[in-house]
Amino acid sequence: MTDEGAGGITRRQLGAGAMALGGALTFAALPADPASAARPARGPRTTLRHGSARRAGLLAAPLRQLVTDAEAFLAPSPRHPWYAGAVLLAGRGGTVALHRPLGMAVRYRAYDEVTDTGVEFPADRQIPMTEDTVFDLASVSKLFTSILAVQQIERGTLELDAAVASYLPDFGRAGKQDVTIRQLLTHTSGFRAWIPLYNAPTPQEKVRRVYDEAPVSPPGTAYLYSDLNLISLQLVLERVTGRTLDVLLHDGITGPLGMRRTRYNPPASWKPRIAATEDARRPWSGLDRGLVWGEVHDENAHSLGGVAGHAGVFSNAWDLAVLGRTLLNGGAYGRERILTPESVELMFTDFNTAFPGDEHGLGFELYQHWYMGAMATPRTAGHTGFTGTSLVLDPTTDSFLVVLGNSVHPVRSWRSGSAPRVAAANQLARAVPVRPARGRTAWFSGMAGSATATLTLPALDTSSGGARLRCSLWWDTEPRADVLVLEAAADDGTAWQPVPFTTKRRGGETEHHPSGTATGWSGRVWHDLTAHLPAARGLTVRWRYTTDRLYAGRGAYVDAVRVEAPGGRLFDETRPADAARVRAEGWTRSAD
Image (cartoon, rainbow, N blue to C red; front, side, top):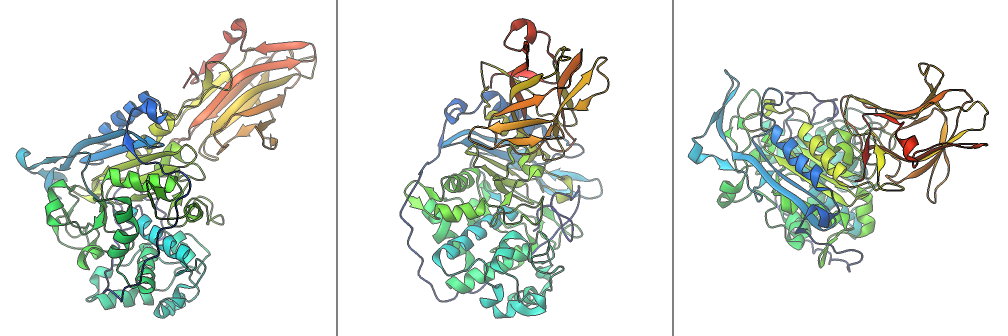
């Protein structure tokens, strides 16, 4: 099932209540193909353990706030709860510093469409969330299929830029003869978002409909998130390996990594430990199934046995953290290696540079503030699932976040957007400390949305000319939407004008900011800033940080501010008298 949209709507654009259905396939096994042996281990082999925020190199207060924020979504947000319950897991390095269940794994037995209410089970039949609760991952399943494909690329049985039709000749029908494996993995094949394969009467007919599907745009010319890409990739994998996708999953990922709670089609004995999903009935569902619990939510996956390239994997928070830690380790976990570091790098590298805003590695989405929040960087990788699941990995800080919620319980129309994911990611990003460039504290802009924060120096006499502002600057904002501006006003302080400046990070080249603004990604390191100030008898200089209402980055920090002129230093915030004259609105002193 497409996670956030259908048709030509991108996943970040879909609003509340939109319905998207998808497909899933299982296929008969082909003759077995021997698996490649694991490659020799290199690099870090970090494994996970529970520990304190301090041990993880994180700040405790934002982690506590992460839980508080998540609990708020158990209440109407704004009309209905976003989820009946959730399991949160956050950490850095080898330490899981937060692993918290909230709410209920099973609460409702049905949905009443007349009153738009959930019909609850009796209290003694409701099941609370636990740390080990298993979830239908929905589209997070795509990551597993992608890893399996990269394994085959690594072993030489697949070529990244080979035509899919070179492995599946019938796939080349209807204008798809030039679609490549890379385009399937980056959603640039031209496929529309989904087709209702569950309406086809036989497995063979479902495959034929994929083969007969014509692209809605020429391959390679547009980004369009589509389940059909990963369904097609499943067909390729099963053809070249001679094994079904569920066997590949076990042999290539979950078995070596010890992910014992991750699989397709969980057995009936797991049901009490699985989060329920939807009261699936027409018209909001493609099939009349009643309460879906312990079986895959996706309609096509259900109708064909539960194994699909785009959906169907069940897992819990710890297992997903193990997978994330493996990738952050460069493909190794403990004594096992499932990918080489070079292969992992393909997942954290943007192949969609022609489609700004739709950054994508092989299988993994990159730099998506709409669910990664302030964790988003050009190399932050992740994915979401329609049922309320998500995984975010930030290699720049070595941090990882798992948010698993049953947000379609009791019905899909109750959830909208990704607010809980963004809130959790913002707090984990805030928990990664930014140490002051000098001294004990630095000015911090905060991370609030729909806000303007100003940091204003006292009026200075720069009329003799040659005055320069110097400071240390750190910024990471949502590109273009959230902007840090250096500006100045003479005399009455009403006509603010931008002040051009340059920045230089250690070992880097000087960067020019002629518009007086900084926005987007700066590497999350301190930069030395220099700005030539206008000559005026009473010049006021300030930083203005403005955010939009949707998403925010990690914010901005300013430290060691001084203004120098040929005749001496006009301002130095290390001098108590000067520091006392700084006006901060929205900015605070932070020691992190």
